[in-house]
Image 1: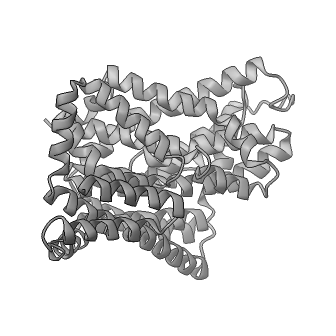
Image 2: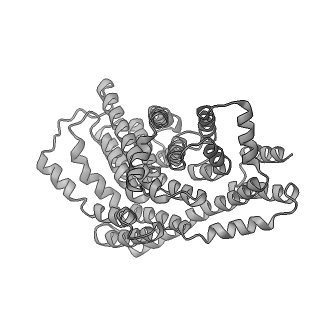
Image 3: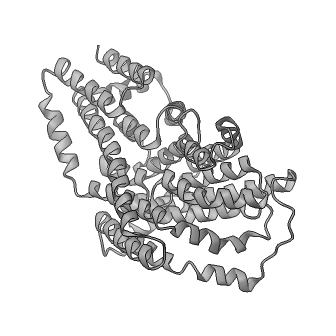
Amino acid sequence: MTWGILGASMVMLMVTGAVLGGALGLTGLLLLQFQAGDATSLAVQAVWNSFTDFTLSAVPLFIFLGDILLASGISGRIYNAMTPLFHRLPGKLLHTNIAVSTVFGAVSGSSSSTAAAVGSVGYPELVKRGYDPATVIASLAAGGTLGLLIPPSLSLLIYGATQDVSIGKLFLAGIVPGLMIAGFFSIYIALLCTFRKGLTPADVERPGWVEILRGLKEVWPLPILIFFVLGTIYMGLATTTEAAALGVIAAIVLGFLWGDLTRKKLWLSFKSSVLMFGTIAMVLLGTLILAQAISILGLPKEMVTWVSEMGLSRYEVLLAIVLVYLVLGCFFDGISLLLMTLPMAFPLMMSMQFDPVWFGIIVTILMEVGMITPPVGLNLFVLVTVAKRQVPLGTAAWATVPYWLIMLGTVALFTVFPDIVLFVPNLLFQ
């Protein structure tokens, strides 16, 4: 009966397009009321404990930080400063999309914010220079996903806060995989443009080293911002929430002094971040209620017993989890998918003796895949909108397939060699 209520609710959720947080919360309340003996009061306690947790308050601050960077035009200055560096490579300025997304992801923490910020500058500039529009959008969409993995990451922050996993370790674990995926993206771009002519303009513009160094000198404020956001955490000077607040203050100062931030833009950024966090908070509220019901009813333990009876190996269970994330990623945005699945997936994977930090990185990569997978594919929608519908969604989605495969390949690589993910956090948290 319990599994029936849970399954029917999920099916109705996907079919009707109901508000995710409300649907998950209602499912949890039904289970607590009718299957757990009128235990709905426990849901209130679970929600209160989580929403008053100090760590969770970092989430709206990081969202606000990303919106400030987007509104202040800092992303445009970073893009223009790094452009001369890649003229000599096959693929030319397409590499700029990946590099700037990597740098921007190191201070924004949001995939859609990274895609919007870099795309609003990169797409019109590259198309004007004669680059293939679909290839430009694909590189921007893929680069935008790095905002979910390169620390500070909203998904890793929420994962750590809700599952009681060290956020410092998660942030450190995201550095090497994020840089590796960015490198793989650039290698693919170089190979693609080498074997398919016409994707980039045939210009002979080759900036000299003086111009390259002059451009890199223009990004001097970024290390300051990265220090406030990440350096203070790793040096033990600030908690995650305090570092997020310091990052917001630094972004405001840099936005006024170095960017184009105004009081009106700052207010609009604040309203935008409040709305975004409100959406996330609604999903989190529903997830907490459902997770409480699932825990009380012992469903994770039942699932572990069921898996044990089937004789599945830990890697077969992992494959099943990957397939579930790939399918659900077609219908739900990344944060919603994370919150919706963790109550069942996390205890199951821990029972299979997987490392919680490693699993957080794997889940985040799978969420990245969903960000460029139709029909939801939020990064694709953002960039198609930025491009004013000049590139159809289907065309943009098809162009991102190789990036999709690269990210799945990294999941396999990190499964075979988990120390790639865990080496840095284990080294610094001995």
